[in-house]
Length: 315
Image 1 (cartoon, rainbow, N blue to C red):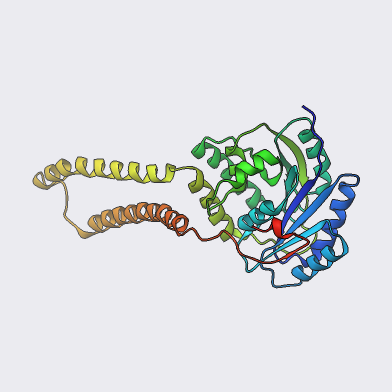
Image 2: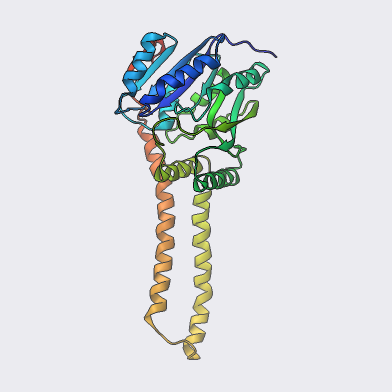
């Protein structure tokens, strides 16, 4: 069934992207000429002039809405804040650094008008990125698909359009350790892909160094899979089995005098078993930590200021 949008929401979180605010908005306006839209910009606790640039843009154009968080809460909570303030029949989420081209939105909107509930963008090329980052990204997506049995497309990111029904289902999930691109797959509905070329950064620097990427990857896997816990169990059984096998062999070797007693082998065994135990305890601790985060029921983010948003839009 054909759809017609009454309002399209474009949601973009930004963190220290002062030089990108105006070029981003200019490209969105050009791409969506003739389409009724709003842009929800989320300032994730920037320390530069990003907040001032957003406020100036909102003062000049009432279609620009601003949600300024009280501090830096991270990309996924900031993106969630924008989604919760969006009012459109269809909502597009994308990064505000212009690596996700706003010019692709009309193509995504056409798929939505044709009846597709979720339209996600898949990177055909990643310009300006290192071979290491491209390779590790492919590894992550393949590992995620295998461990979770979820059909998350390789090279898909948070750049996607969602119908209001699908978005409401997504926002009903209250978990704190959020992996939104996986959550959009989990909610189901009809989904299709559109290809694009991920552009180089036009300004600023990446806010996702290797440490944050590793943390994000681990959060994603543990949010949708208990496989690491199962691995810890299998390791325990495997080493226990080897230990039981070693008992009679040790006795035989001792009394046939083919084994010379010494400290090095004992130290190596203790270190090996101790390392395995610490790894498994660490994995369990990661899951327990996530349980602890959830049961505290703290808000995912705190809003410090809203611009061009009515009282009824506040949450």
